[in-house]
Amino acid sequence: MSTHGGAPDQAFPVPSHIALLHHGDAELRVAALEFMREAVDRPDEALLCFGEPGVGQRLLRDLELDVGRDLSADRRSGRILVGEANPDVDQQLENFVAPLEQLRVSGYALVRFIGIVAWNVRNFPPPEDFLWFESKMNEVVAGFPVVGLCPYDLGRVPARAIAYGALETHPFVMSDGVLRQNPQFIPPDRYLRERLLGLPWLESEEP
Amino acid sequence: MSAQEVVQDDLDLQRGAIAILGPDGIVTWADEAWAALKSQTDLPGVPIGKNLVEAYRKRDEPILQAVANAIVALFQGKATYFEIEHGARSEGRSYLTSAAALRGDRAGAVLIHRVVSGRLRATTPPSAEVRMQHSDVIERLTPRERQVLEVMAAGLDNRAIAAKLRIEYTTVRGHVRAVIEKLGARSRLEAVARAYRNGWVPKG
Image 1 (tube, each protein chain N blue to C red):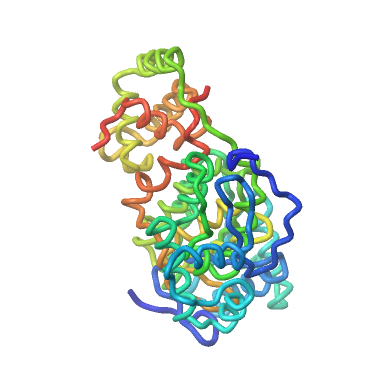
Image 2: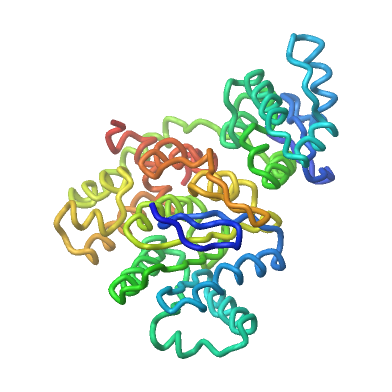
């Protein structure tokens, strides 16, 4: 595994799938912009912004304000892409994998991916499917030069999302600007049986 | 109030505070519970409560680890949020937020808060009638859909299923949607969980 520049005092492993734990939009903005700005400054890097409809575009607008320049040329050239979440988890997986494949074909040395996490909302997969998606991401990113950052807002998403999603599906966790290996990570080949099948809200026998 | 019915929306936990959800559904601050436990055991005299919060802020790892291990060992050898949530639902035992929560930095405080403030509901076992209805459900699947369900249950995504069964990706999508619908599930994983629970796919 190689590493690539992250925050000034650390390097991101490549490939990697990182849960970013933050409180509120202000913290997210600081961490996300720092992460995305690197891609803007390096022409051999690409950027993929992912989230509920409209979220990726908002991230890019913030990035444009931050770097002080219009990034529409990078959008048109395909160096910066926006992906949308989908309530159908299979479609969401496609919405993630297809742009990565496109960027790999284009030959970028590194793809920075940021996917804003939501939980139990209309335009997102149901929680259990989203957890499967997060675990599956580890298999997907293994085949790409990707650093993936998944921000979890501690004040917005429920504890289950943090416990089962952020802490058990990401090999790395970042909080307060510090990147750590995550001892609670469950590899995807075990996650389905060890965790997903026993999720408390899947236990009832409805319908 | 039972553990299954506990609702503590009025709790005002501070960051780093630790609480215990007891078998009676009562939430106890850690330092009170710790004092009670220490009187019954010969646990090491490690700090907890406010002292633990302070140690945590200072990132005193040996102390945190000792506390975490002692507590977790005391309660169940190993405790994760998953087990806490399950335990609170089913067994009504005492559960302390885990070493995992402590290691989760500020997430720990959130976990604790949500554990005690969340509405926990009891689950009831399925009736014989319901089980009978479930055995009919699997009969609705075509042989190909059952095959797809088996590979879904192995954790494969649609691309991998298409490769394994040597069928088109779009065909797989159609089968997966049909399986979810016919099993009366709201999601892919709910369909898989239901299939395991009812023995429609091999557990091995």
